[in-house]
Length: 180
Image (tube, rainbow, N blue to C red; front, side, top):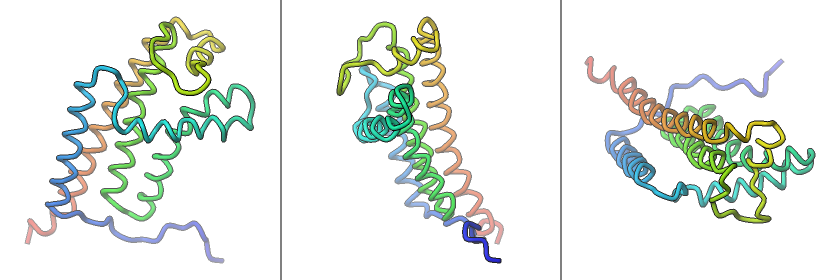
């Protein structure tokens, strides 16, 4: 019996030195942009906002709490699904970018979480603050800043790990050629 979901055995797609240099330049510029950004909303967050709002609609079918949580889930599930797709097809640069994008979401989600008590961020839509409602339901509102800060830290670590993985994959693919 043939298994339809079995991943074909193949090597990871190598990237050229020029592609690695271009990706590294992109990541450095983006990370500097993220580090010096004062308002907590990065260029990529405009794209994330589309998936956030779509997540409210999609998960709204599963009740009030899932409707509220669905925004954050939407913006995390899309890059994660793309990362899984690229992983399945062994696309090195695609996995690295999708993983980087997934963890970049942690920066704004962490900022959004940390804002749950002060409610200083401008919001899109109804004006309800997702994380104020969720943390209020879960009796975590007093921990909002700590939880948000932790998530932001994980985002930074994840983005840096994604870039490191890309470099590691490049060097691993180059190793046989260096040893000849």
